[in-house]
Length: 144
Image (cartoon, rainbow, N blue to C red; front, side, top):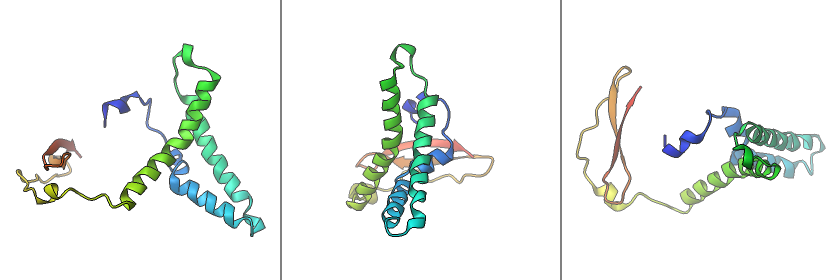
Protein backbone atom coordinates (compact mmCIF):
# COMPACT_ATOMS: atom_id res chain seq x y z
CA UNK A 1 0.00 0.00 0.00
CA UNK A 2 1.38 3.38 -0.96
CA UNK A 3 1.75 6.18 1.56
CA UNK A 4 -0.74 8.30 -0.36
CA UNK A 5 -3.39 5.62 0.22
CA UNK A 6 -3.33 6.34 3.94
CA UNK A 7 -5.55 9.37 3.33
CA UNK A 8 -8.51 7.13 2.57
CA UNK A 9 -10.81 6.76 5.57
CA UNK A 10 -11.71 3.14 5.06
CA UNK A 11 -11.86 0.66 2.23
CA UNK A 12 -14.73 1.27 -0.16
CA UNK A 13 -17.33 -1.47 -0.54
CA UNK A 14 -16.78 -3.78 -3.51
CA UNK A 15 -20.13 -2.89 -5.10
CA UNK A 16 -19.01 0.73 -5.55
CA UNK A 17 -15.96 -0.44 -7.49
CA UNK A 18 -18.12 -2.65 -9.70
CA UNK A 19 -20.77 -0.04 -10.51
CA UNK A 20 -18.14 2.60 -11.19
CA UNK A 21 -16.04 0.45 -13.49
CA UNK A 22 -15.49 0.95 -17.19
CA UNK A 23 -17.07 -2.43 -17.89
CA UNK A 24 -20.27 -1.55 -15.99
CA UNK A 25 -20.61 1.80 -17.72
CA UNK A 26 -19.81 0.25 -21.10
CA UNK A 27 -22.48 -2.38 -20.55
CA UNK A 28 -24.99 0.31 -19.57
CA UNK A 29 -24.15 2.27 -22.72
CA UNK A 30 -24.47 -0.88 -24.85
CA UNK A 31 -27.88 -1.68 -23.34
CA UNK A 32 -28.90 1.94 -23.89
CA UNK A 33 -28.08 1.59 -27.59
CA UNK A 34 -29.97 -1.70 -27.83
CA UNK A 35 -32.93 -0.27 -25.94
CA UNK A 36 -33.66 2.13 -28.80
CA UNK A 37 -34.99 -0.91 -30.64
CA UNK A 38 -36.28 -2.96 -27.70
CA UNK A 39 -38.77 -1.03 -25.58
CA UNK A 40 -38.67 -3.40 -22.59
CA UNK A 41 -34.96 -2.61 -22.02
CA UNK A 42 -35.33 1.16 -21.75
CA UNK A 43 -35.38 1.27 -17.97
CA UNK A 44 -32.31 -0.98 -17.49
CA UNK A 45 -29.58 1.53 -18.51
CA UNK A 46 -31.30 4.25 -16.50
CA UNK A 47 -31.23 2.05 -13.41
CA UNK A 48 -27.58 1.14 -14.07
CA UNK A 49 -26.54 4.79 -14.45
CA UNK A 50 -28.62 5.63 -11.37
CA UNK A 51 -26.76 3.04 -9.30
CA UNK A 52 -23.45 4.46 -10.53
CA UNK A 53 -24.56 7.97 -9.61
CA UNK A 54 -25.69 6.75 -6.18
CA UNK A 55 -22.27 5.17 -5.51
CA UNK A 56 -20.52 8.43 -6.44
CA UNK A 57 -23.01 10.42 -4.38
CA UNK A 58 -22.39 8.19 -1.33
CA UNK A 59 -18.65 8.80 -1.66
CA UNK A 60 -19.29 12.55 -1.94
CA UNK A 61 -21.44 12.57 1.20
CA UNK A 62 -19.04 10.47 3.30
CA UNK A 63 -15.88 12.35 2.32
CA UNK A 64 -14.31 14.43 5.07
CA UNK A 65 -13.34 17.90 3.95
CA UNK A 66 -11.83 20.58 6.14
CA UNK A 67 -14.73 22.85 7.16
CA UNK A 68 -13.41 26.02 5.55
CA UNK A 69 -13.17 24.21 2.17
CA UNK A 70 -16.40 22.25 2.49
CA UNK A 71 -18.50 24.09 -0.09
CA UNK A 72 -21.20 23.01 -2.50
CA UNK A 73 -18.80 23.34 -5.44
CA UNK A 74 -16.20 21.19 -3.63
CA UNK A 75 -18.81 18.49 -3.09
CA UNK A 76 -19.85 18.63 -6.75
CA UNK A 77 -16.19 18.29 -7.74
CA UNK A 78 -15.94 15.18 -5.53
CA UNK A 79 -19.04 13.76 -7.19
CA UNK A 80 -17.54 14.35 -10.63
CA UNK A 81 -14.21 12.82 -9.62
CA UNK A 82 -15.91 9.78 -8.08
CA UNK A 83 -17.71 9.25 -11.39
CA UNK A 84 -14.83 10.00 -13.77
CA UNK A 85 -11.78 8.59 -11.97
CA UNK A 86 -12.49 4.84 -12.22
CA UNK A 87 -13.50 5.10 -15.88
CA UNK A 88 -10.53 7.24 -16.91
CA UNK A 89 -8.02 5.07 -15.03
CA UNK A 90 -9.39 1.89 -16.57
CA UNK A 91 -9.42 3.48 -20.03
CA UNK A 92 -5.75 4.51 -19.64
CA UNK A 93 -4.82 1.02 -18.39
CA UNK A 94 -6.55 -0.77 -21.25
CA UNK A 95 -5.16 1.64 -23.83
CA UNK A 96 -1.64 0.93 -22.54
CA UNK A 97 -2.22 -2.82 -22.81
CA UNK A 98 -3.72 -2.54 -26.28
CA UNK A 99 -0.98 -0.23 -27.55
CA UNK A 100 1.55 -3.00 -27.01
CA UNK A 101 3.54 -2.01 -23.96
CA UNK A 102 5.98 -4.84 -23.34
CA UNK A 103 8.43 -5.87 -20.64
CA UNK A 104 11.86 -4.34 -21.38
CA UNK A 105 14.36 -6.79 -22.92
CA UNK A 106 16.91 -6.02 -20.18
CA UNK A 107 14.47 -7.26 -17.57
CA UNK A 108 13.69 -10.43 -19.48
CA UNK A 109 17.40 -11.16 -20.00
CA UNK A 110 18.44 -10.44 -16.40
CA UNK A 111 19.17 -13.35 -14.10
CA UNK A 112 17.56 -13.63 -10.72
CA UNK A 113 20.08 -13.12 -7.96
CA UNK A 114 18.19 -14.79 -5.15
CA UNK A 115 16.01 -17.86 -5.02
CA UNK A 116 12.37 -17.30 -4.25
CA UNK A 117 11.42 -18.62 -0.86
CA UNK A 118 8.38 -20.83 -0.61
CA UNK A 119 5.50 -19.24 1.25
CA UNK A 120 3.46 -21.33 3.64
CA UNK A 121 0.16 -20.57 5.31
CA UNK A 122 1.87 -19.61 8.56
CA UNK A 123 5.16 -18.36 7.20
CA UNK A 124 6.50 -15.45 5.29
CA UNK A 125 8.01 -15.71 1.83
CA UNK A 126 10.04 -13.28 -0.17
CA UNK A 127 8.43 -11.74 -3.23
CA UNK A 128 10.61 -9.79 -5.65
CA UNK A 129 9.33 -7.23 -8.10
CA UNK A 130 11.34 -5.44 -10.74
CA UNK A 131 10.82 -1.75 -11.04
CA UNK A 132 13.50 -0.38 -13.35
CA UNK A 133 14.73 -1.12 -16.84
CA UNK A 134 17.89 -2.87 -15.63
CA UNK A 135 15.89 -5.54 -13.82
CA UNK A 136 16.89 -4.48 -10.33
CA UNK A 137 13.83 -4.03 -8.23
CA UNK A 138 12.33 -3.92 -4.83
CA UNK A 139 11.50 -6.75 -2.49
CA UNK A 140 8.83 -7.14 0.10
CA UNK A 141 7.81 -9.69 2.61
CA UNK A 142 4.17 -10.64 3.05
CA UNK A 143 2.64 -12.75 5.75
CA UNK A 144 -0.26 -14.86 4.60
